[in-house]
Image (cartoon, rainbow, N blue to C red; front, side, top):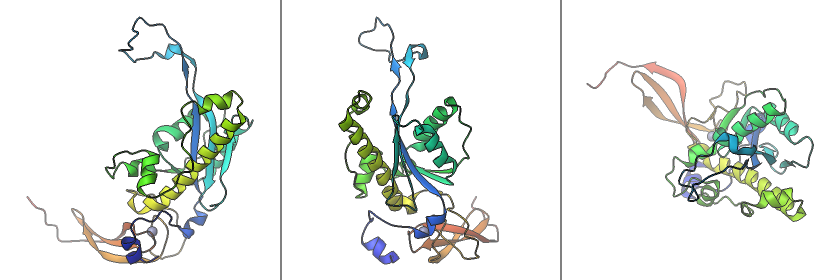
Length: 267
Ligand SMILES: [Zn+2]
């Protein structure tokens, strides 16, 4: 895709970065069962929503997960609580990933799985670099920073909606249709997150470097493409860097090839 086309056509719903095949990127999403609380109160209007931890009768736990390797676009893996190795299998995937892509993973999914794994007696997993797309979504000033709305803004299709807050309840009651919906929902969110990463890639602030292919070429840190154009210098306070634009994903980056310039500073 040429840069001109990418700009003129607006944000495409699907971009691919084939050079990332060796980068071990795992996209994942978890579904959870909320904590069950029980407490006594005189405050029937619930003016004080504070719930003491002693009121927790059953802590929250994992209901299901979906995950996909970026380099295996047609395959999405899925497990739920009916599978005895649900937690262990997700642990294996995260432990062998160099990068994880999530929507709100830093505040939710990655924290939750740490707790679930630790309580299940699993060892700490090797820490992947995290690309949490909710942080990029919030830089746009859209009306909502939700996965659903961000997908809508970028023309990324999601298959079905959550099906209501009680879908997990129907699942645990043994409703086969609810389990099928849960699977469709969870797998759909993983696919949507993957497509969203393709759409948002150039906009992710400070995107991690996606690998070092071991040649001397100047590569885009986001998609590893070598089709990059020098678009001039960036002057920091003291150091001048070269700035590049990637012709594949349109992202900007700068190199460490820099020069110290005569130091002038506005006073
Ligand atoms: Zn790129």
